Length: 392
Image (cartoon, rainbow, N blue to C red; front, side):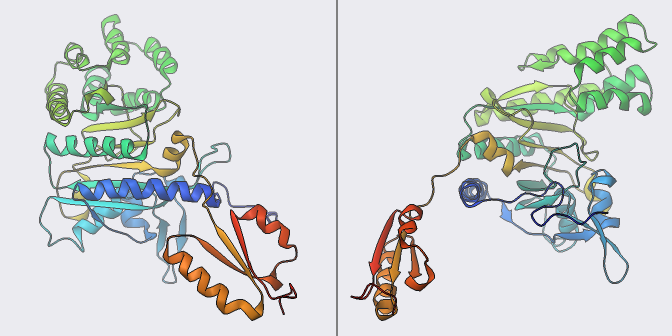
């Protein structure tokens, strides 16, 4: 193993420079303010969790987990998501709090990346979890809140795709008969490799009718009418239940007045294995991958011995800022350059300006090699210098 160069960073890690940081901070504040207005309480969980609890429950691929050992020999992980840590929290520190719980977070997550992945291994996510409410109203609330957050952040052209894990499972198991065969097709759908999906379906030893049903799944993307079309492909109890839940959800979202941002996508498959029902993703028109996602996970809390239905979403702050396509203008700053004899005067002046809302930098004259460069760095430069023009 070669020694890294002085300026190298670990794979997938990034620096955030001042202007981008300020942009992210402004967006973060707007989103958190909106979430707070909907009654969600802010929480934090540890950066490190036990692998045998949160690491296993997170449903992130094992090779994507950052692992390390503590002094007692326990395997720890840097948190790869927030749903599992919050489930642990709901079953422990918040065990005496009655359902439903409305919780929100704003934190960094860590997932190891392959060299060819080009994705960040550390990223910021803002999200909510609504725990203990299994109704369509709860699903509608988190989706409507996600849309409100995107709008408040300034994203103008976006769409939210809504699907259902139960519908995809019902169709594939009805036709293919087992999970192993179904997982191959789910993988194509997750990767949105529809060409590969079609080719694989055509290669299967199935009747032309069943092949047609699997291919018709790809057409179930669009408006509310797609729910009616979906009924023709799956006629078993699991499929009907999934479509009934989506119909109720659509009615809820009509009441929120957000259906203009929605589309039905019944071939939507998520990478998290703990999802059990409604799933959704938010897309910006100028970004090729989801900037937000979420869904219902009604079985995860059982792993922490406090069963309960739950739903939520996570919003990637880095992708959101990329979708906005802007960075904030450099903050206006005034620099007061002073000599020793006028230090007290300069400090008093800076204090007065800061009280009035200005951003002020105090600079000892002796600490500047070239005074002229300050005019390039600051919007205004004020000199508090003795008569001899030196810092003496």
